[in-house]
Length: 266
Ligand SMILES: Nc1ncnc2c1ncn2[C@@H]1O[C@H](COP(=O)(O)OP(=O)(O)OP(=O)(O)O)[C@@H](O)[C@H]1O
Image 1 (tube, rainbow, N blue to C red):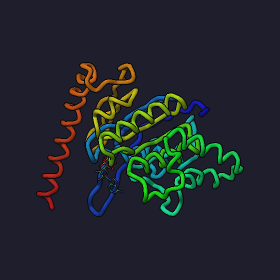
Image 2: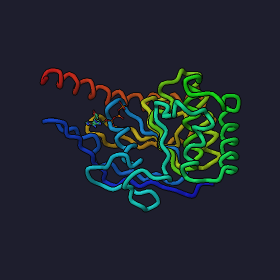
Image 3: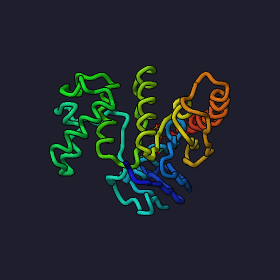
């Protein structure tokens, strides 16, 4: 069982400089994500969702501000934070089970313990029959299951997920969303999940943080108290979908306006 882990993001700013252009990707972000919360970062392309997630992961550093996990400042990647990307970051030369075991082997765990963990994860994610296959012989959905299993193998109390289901068809996506919710309820992990799908955010999250387009700020921070399993056809689901639709659309329009301005400048 993972230990209780919370994330604090205090006054985080991030500016990218490329040539003469400066892009303020994040501006004055404050978020406290308590232990076990499933939080979605929602917003159109370019509003800084990945930048914020990468900063929490420790892959890139904020220009200013502070991020802590359980009070410890994030200075780089760490084992208490597992990351799942949209593109299945698997080793193509390893079978499914070797891919899942890899991180544990690096940690130097003993063989029996690794085998037991891998077995449990193969079962949990419906991968038993695929254990000896290579990633190229799997569907997108199966590859993403393996990517999730790899992160779960390390038992990080925090899971950071960057549009993990973005490349999947609707049915596979719903299937994996359900599996993720099951795993989350069984493991009590703290999840920070990036998506630009409003429906996905409402289906999954305890809390939805809507971000603005450039500079990326917190536009709205909404607690979702709909009972689970959530029904996308329910009136309350649709009310929230409409509300979020307006918020995201405003930012989408700002994105389009900015693109048109840039086209004129260029
Ligand atoms: N390395 C970089 N150098 C310069 N600008 C960057 C860099 N990374 C991101 N940006 C800019 O920062 C802004 C935020 O980008 P980010 O990728 O975080 O947005 P996002 O909301 O995750 O979008 P998407 O859904 O398309 O991934 C964008 O305007 C992007 O062009």
